[in-house]
Structures are given as structure tokens and as C-alpha cells.
Amino acid sequence: MKKLSLILSVAAIFLAAKSEAQTPSLRDAFKNDFLIGTAMNTWQIEGKDTAGDRLIKQQFNAVTPENCMKAEIIQPGWDKYNFELADKLVAFAKKNNIKVNAHNLIWHSQLPAFMHHMQSADSVRQYFENHITKVASRYDGKVYSWDVVNEALNEDGTLRKDIFLDKLGDDYIVEAFRLAQKAAPHTKLYYNDYNIEQPKKRVGAIALIKKIQAAGVRIDGVGIQGHWKAGVVPMADIEESIKEFSALGIDVMFTELDLSVLPNPWDKVTADVSETAQGSAKMNPYTKALPDSMQQLLAKSYADLFTLFMKYKKNIGRVTFWGVNDGQSWLNGFPIRGRTNYPLLFDRNFKPKPAFYSVIATAKK
Ligand code: G3I
Image (cartoon, rainbow, N blue to C red; front, side, top):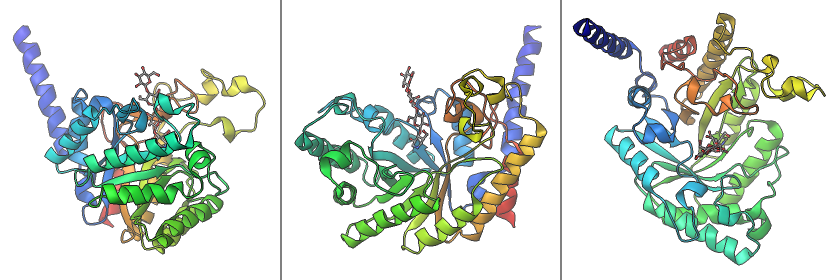
């Protein structure tokens, strides 16, 4: 009996590896077009998610740390840095011929605790200069690129009011890129944000990029995060943004791509918060599985997007998914905790979904 179950489990592993080996690879399919990446979480970086790591090596030639290179983790104390996970990520990537887009140096969120109530502008400037210089210089030439500044704009294109704008003034973004270019001369430098395909916010992002360029400071690209919704992807705005951003002579990237299949509280104007409250079946309709109709809607949305990316492949440097499989996605916990979302190309068993094959099909056209 014991011998039989051993044979069966070996057979199962062999078959899984065999079917995986037969699965086409995104990195090979788009190797002449643009980098294909994924966000990598702590478990994957620590090698605790072996199936995830295997898929990352097979499918992707770029990775972005989902959290481990953010300020609250990489600089937990005024003079205290923790490079353990970031070093592991860089080593994994080097070993597997994968490029790292480091994320991120300056962001209003996930700041170290000591920054939360900092009043003195001098202290904020000290932190700002130390953090960029210390962290960016350590990984210069080891990472391919940095999201130097992340999410500094409001939806109307004006600068977001945060501790950096408040204490350092309007020029803090130019200063961040100036410090990064000095600390990391061998690393590409990007501005990264969500909804900058939207007309008003796009105007703000273009003004921001032109200001850096006018100051004679290096910026190599702009990252459009791409947190969209299946079936309502703003295709015309995305195409217009590719044209307008590439006209600035910089790379355009789609850096945190995922397509939610779940209703959002703001989808439906309702005053009845219980409808949008956690646990409402209406807001979490696919707890068991995603119906085929939604699989097809997701596959169509991804196919339309990648058809557009292929049309502008000369202007697009990278497309990164914000997670390896549906189970890892932040969209299971946002904007409502405890939901079951299916926004990516691989399911919770690391199996390719119809959307995966619709994306691969666009590479062949
Ligand atoms: O590590 C702690 C753990 O020790 C603790 O037990 C647990 C319980 O609360 O929290 C863990 O930290 C969480 C962290 O992810 C790691 O899992 C934080 O609470 C949680 O807020 C954090 O969420 C991240 C979020 O950024 C924070 O803003 C998501 O994983 C990450 O996907 C998301 O990524 C952002 C991009 O950086 C920028 N663009 C938007 C995107 C989605 O919000």
C-alpha cells in the first residue's frame, strides 16, 4: 500500500512538472517585445512558495518586490536599515537571469514609524537624502530600475499633499531624481502612479516629467500601474497615454497590472453601506469559482490590452502583473477585506487560466 501511494505521488509530481513544461512561457513569447514581470512577495523571496518560484522562473524576466524594498521595511529606524529580504530578492533574480524593478524610494504610504509625526523640515530632508542615497547606491547596477517616486499626484493632476510636499516643497520630486541619479548612475529611474492614463492626472504627470527634464535631471520612464477592472478597461485613455508619454522620449511601462472581476463599493451609488460591507454576498459573488462567462470576460480584456501593447511595443519597456496568482493578489483584501478575486493569469493552483492563453495568442499575431 505504502509503495503504491509513493508511486502515485511521484507520478503526480511528474505529471505536474510535465504539464508545466508544456505551458507556454510569457517571457519567451514576448522576448523581442518588452519585459514581462510580476510582483514577488515575502514567501516567494524566502523560497517558501516553491510552486510560485518555479512559475516565476518559467514565466517572467522581471520582478518587482511587492513590499520588501519599501521604506517601512528597508529602513525601520532612523539609522537602522534591513536589507535582508531585498538582498535575497536580488540574489534570486541574478541567479535566474531576471531583472529587478526596485519599488520604491519616495512614497507617502508605508513610511517608517519614525516618519509618521515628524515635524521638522530639516529632519524630513535628512531622512529624504539619507534614504535615497543609502538605498539606491547599495543596489546600483544590481537592480535594473527604481520607482524613484510613487503616487505623488491627486486625481486632478495636482501634487498630493503629503509630508514631502509639506516639508520640502514643490521641487521635492526633482530633488528625489537628482539624488537617485547621483547614487545610482547605472540604474534606470522611473515615476510610477495609478490612473495616470486618465486625462487630468496624465496632464499632471506630463508636467512633473517635463519639470524633471527641464532641470537637466535624468528620468528614464513612467510606470502606469494598471489596476483596472475586467470589462471596463479604459482602452482609449491607455492608447492616448502611451502616445503622449512616449512623446517625452521616455519608456512607458505597465507596472502593477491586474483586472478585478469583483464589484466595487463605488460601482454602484448606494447609501446602504451594508451592501458594500465586508461579507456581503453581493460584493463577493465568486467564493467557490469564477464562472466561465467571467473567465471569458477577463480573457477578452487581457487580450485587448496586450493587442494594444503589441501595437506600441516599440514604446513599451515592461509589463508587470501585480502578483503571480489569484491567491496572492492584494485585491482579495481591497477595497473590502476577505473577498475571493481572480485578477491575474494563473489560478490559486498556479494553473494558467483562459486569460493566460489569450495573452500568449497576442504574441503570435
Ligand atoms: O507584514 C505585516 C505582517 O507582519 C502583519 O501580520 C500583517 C497584518 O496586518 O500585515 C503585514 O503587512 C502588510 C503588507 O502588505 C505585507 O503583506 C500590510 O498590512 C499591508 O497593508 C501591505 O499591503 C500592501 C499595500 O501595497 C500597502 O499599501 C500590498 O501587499 C501591496 O500589494 C500594495 O501594493 C501597492 C503598490 O506598492 C503601489 N501601488 C498600489 C499597490 C496596491 O495597493
